[in-house]
Image 1 (tube, helix red, strand yellow):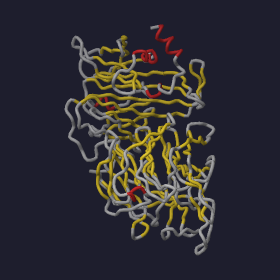
Image 2 (spheres, helix red, strand yellow):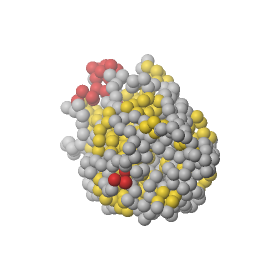
Image 3 (tube, rainbow, N blue to C red):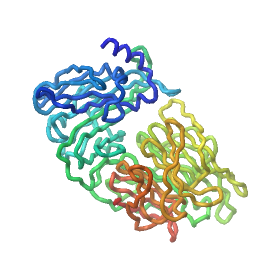
Image 4 (tube, rainbow, N blue to C red):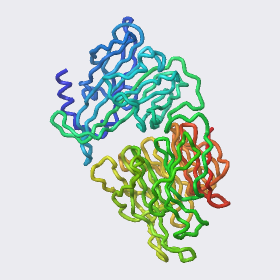
Length: 551
């Protein structure tokens, strides 16, 4: 054991791979009428290399039984996992705490890493009321909901529901994990229509400085896991699956946009849909009157009234993303000519952050160059900006960007990193999917639409390609995309909805919009409900929002 502890101290400065590993407690085979569990350190529910076990040798383990007793338990070393023999008989919950140590990755600020693994042994979610209560020993915890709905879970931080937390769901028989965020009451859902072992993981970052084992840290990253086994699958429900921002029982009838616009920014976070700016005039007619800088939001649970928020610079062809409850606005194009004058369009360098609590915009570091007709997405803690061009005024040729931009939002000193991109395209769409950025469609410099899909891995700064989107060539012009229920969807100009196959090698038909549109946005209300917002059609700009339930 001393050797393991010394190894842990030596390995506390881990590689990038380390944070991709988590502590899981997995039900084991009974031994002599006693239930057992395995403690593994892996990126899945299967044991990884035995050498990694030394890194979690400090894990403290305890068991809660149905008689409401919590007792510490010891683990023994196995080949590729630690083993716990569970005292007593009947259902129990096994939990643990591991203060892993201080990690430093590259130039980022060091952080303390803490794990809170838990498993339900001999019980399914919602079956035993005792396990629906929070456990004081676990600062971050995933708990089955108390409302009797067995496929609903709640994330608690220090005993209170945690909204907007990042959740990853590992389901039996699924090649890809699903991702979602918790709703306002910390809730999310899991489709339990398959038998087998499920793994849930949640992350919470605490802005707390300190020192641990002689090493200073700037933040604390907390990870909680929950493992349970389903022996009799629940019937699948239409609303089953991870919730993007709270539960929606049926497709809501959204109020139309305050103004019909295309080429605008939109993002969904914490149960609110935000929209900014856009082009409100006739196609290809740009002026100080046809491009707007208004900012509104609508609540998904209400969906009838748009709330006006503090506006900003007039802009179209911008990107709007959300991170930890705040809204980021990146770049865009701004005309400087009056109506009837020759177009004088300029791409913006501005990047600003909006705080819904203070209702104020905050300036962030400008982009290295003006950029519009691009798109942006957040993957993990990184804001990634891709594609677009730089417009520099009347009669001057625009510059097509050959680089992408990355901003690490966890760093104290925010600084844009320039990454080469293997294409020049604008009027494209991006989506964060399985830790990568999918860059879909767009226009090329020769004015042709491309059906191409490029895939960027921000962890490795590498590029690969995916299958072209289906349909006519025009489908490459300004499609919209989003991720729902762990699947990637795209909505191009032909009005159809396409979904990337599980293997990622093809697109499949998933539905059709009532009103085909381009230069629009699409968001996921939850895993089985998408919302198409604004855009342009043959009749001009569109104000209507449309709910779509994928096949």
